[in-house]
Amino acid sequence: KPRVLSGVQPTGRIHLGNYLGAIQQWVTHQYDYDSWFCVVDMHAITVPQDPRQLAEDTLSTAAMYLACGLDPAHCRIFVQSQVPAHAELAWLLNCITPMGWLEKMTQYKDKRQRLGDDTPVNLGLFAYPVLMAADILLYRAERVPVGEDQRQHLELTRDIARTFNHTFCRKRKPHKLPSVFREPEALILPEGLGVSRVMSLTDGTSKMSKSAPSDMSRINLLDDADTIRNKIRRCKTDTERHLRFDDPSRPECNNLLHIYRAITGNRPKSDIERELETLNPPGWAGFKELLAEALISLLGPIQERYHQFRNERLFLEEVLSRGREEANLVANETLRTAKEAMGFAVAS
Ligand code: AQP
Image (cartoon, rainbow, N blue to C red; front, side, top):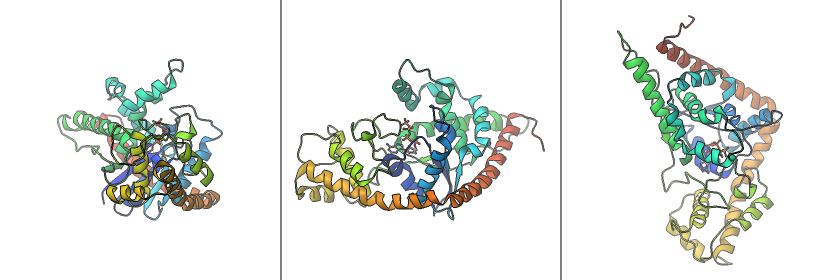
């Protein structure tokens, strides 16, 4: 089976963008792929975290993976910081990655802008994509199921893998070595099969994100029914009455229709547009009610399972401990071959 690897940062509450763009794909693919999913807590600390909260958020994120449908009998779930090879490989890769490549990363540029000129940017935030490359390359993953926002980081991962293989394997004299790393492909939902980029509820041109200051901009998977109704009631819309897909001048309408479609079985767009013409009350008011209730139906069962898993601490720790052991085995082996290729004196 081809191997997949992906992860979410424990930086707050998991939202609908994380679910539709990434986790839902993981759940679907876990039976067809050799699947590895991590909670990327070392990525989380690229922006300040409360040390009293990080471990709990890490466990909550793992519980949410299970609640969304990841089955530890079919995939491995582990915590990034419990596999030291991630940090070590990231350092090796830092030393072959030109800073110019990282300066071009739009996510870095966006985050930097959001932090403002007065907040100094740390080296970790700048080097974030190199750590992400290490995460993926350590497992020689072939596919990486992510949202559209990660496409550029995946391209960078491929560039880093190619540079490493070229420098330390193919050009190696007198004997070439087999490639250490495999160039992974992003697995991003194609248009028509869900939403690869869920946008903010308060601005249809920016992505739904954990770090956006206003909680009204996102639906968190743990939001209760009243909160969901309130957020959808107050989300940004426009003054047109007809609800149509794919009008570029109506980003909010487009986003909400795509969310509705993704959570109600990906029916043809024309079917949904027809359904929306018969709403009572008509237009936005009726659609907002429909969307809110569809979200509540989707999230209710996930929330119930989440609270069960969150209370089964021993089970959760056992899943993560098994994941940690297996991840360390694979990651240490790849790290050893990478260090050998670079010329380190590797202890036998
Ligand atoms: N809006 C989104 N639409 C589709 N997919 C998304 N993902 C994130 N946002 C969307 C996907 O979720 C996975 C984990 O991403 P993350 O942990 O980086 O989450 P985040 O919400 O992007 O976190 P932050 O801290 O809020 O980051 P910034 O500030 O960069 O937005 C990934 O597969 C991602 O594609």
